[in-house]
Length: 136
Ligand code: ZN
Image 1: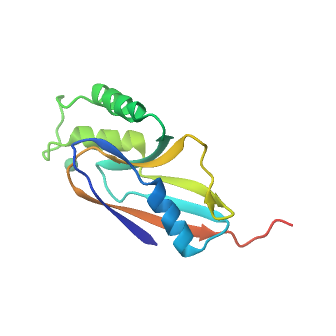
Image 2: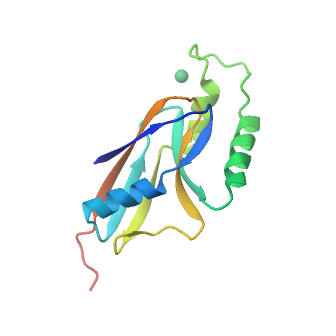
Image 3: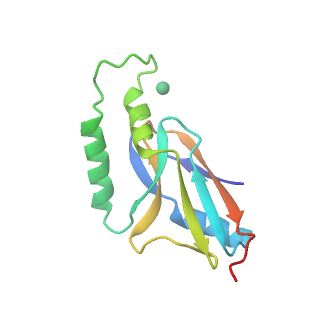
């Protein structure tokens, strides 16, 4: 298992970690299998979305902010319930097929770490599961 360390700078942001995941696959020498990308945090998440127009990320964060307002009848004393709810909506992990040492993402897809309660020091775990059964 490998770890990607991230220092987020904003309260909410989406950080493209596709390149770092690719580097881990290259360093591990895996040809075919699955890369599991997991965020061990309750106020952040992992998702796959568009990697071309940064306005898409801005729109996603804007809409999440409207769906989950900062002020509501939250009970959690830490005061970051909106971040917990956004993390729930995003999910904590993605699994991506690795084929001939390449991440099998669509042309416009990137893997994103989603921060909802920054700035913080964060971690992402990446585990590579190699295919052992060959398809004849
Ligand atoms: Zn909390």
